Length: 431
Ligand code: GLU
Image (tube, rainbow, N blue to C red):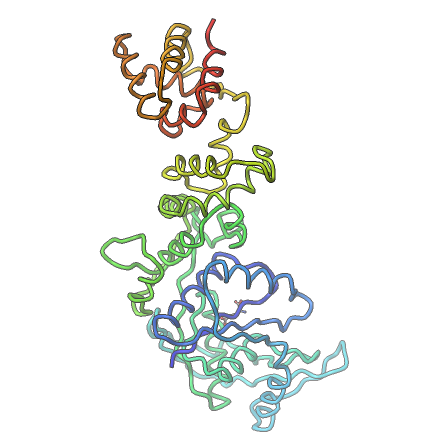
């Protein structure tokens, strides 16, 4: 049975790279009906923090990566010591007294040799152990090193496939030597290609290596982020980009992971988020948006019209690329006085529209039924009577009502603003 693990160190938040590693492990487990194991690598007592454990677990849950087992390396210290003593007994390791503190380190003797592994993504890799120095297994303070604890745990938890980022490739030969010295069977290794930032170079904080929880706070949907992470190293074929995770489970295999590095492109992620936002359940989205509106004081904490807000959400959904953009895009529905962007005024309200606006107000007043279709009919009949093109009046009215040059359809905007508010905003421009 396939058993894979994701092994974060709780010394920081879960970032994009870690999210992708978790995704591919989880996906492989689900594809093969295997087990996905979470191992918290908290051997560094000083740098490991409970708040990071919580943050990592919450982010994994949010992304939808449920785990079958979880354990903490800090609970296994006795096992690491036991295996280190075995290596000492076999003469494959030696001790070294610490000069600074009471205690001794256990060090693994590296015998020069060629080390070969068959990586499922990179193919055969050959390392020369000439460059590998003797390896500390247990530090003089009693804590195990990453490479040693990693091997012991991967063996103890029957890991069949070690899927991790390419940044660990230099650790692999060191681990292979330990497997051999302990007489353990090697797992299959699969190193995922690096993720680069848009400006080349490794993904850095500046180029988008932000925590998964930050993406959540910015208003990305988990399905969109997961789909995007998937595309960073894998393609479902036929030039498809959007793929539901359940379908990916059916199609995925390690053998068709890209070998070349991926580029993290925020614009593309925004596009992907829009693809999912379009189809998201509007009520669910509204629940996510309400706190943002409360925060902006656009609505009170309790007395708001949820049905009305849902209608507005529906209006913006096709264009929204971030949930959190909604309050800024839809602000004109929630404030009394709209602020007109100077550029918008310059472009579309650069002459006197008193006559046209007054006539439109008249038409609105004359409407027996105030609905989107009737508003549009009146508007079309007005512009044809004036002998102008629809767009010659649509843009100025939009700017007067919303303060912006882009937005949802004008007749919907008029309808949802309501007759009185629309009239009031137009009147401001009548001399
Ligand atoms: N704790 C390591 C990391 O966060 C795990 C590496 C591995 O998967 O072996 O990078």
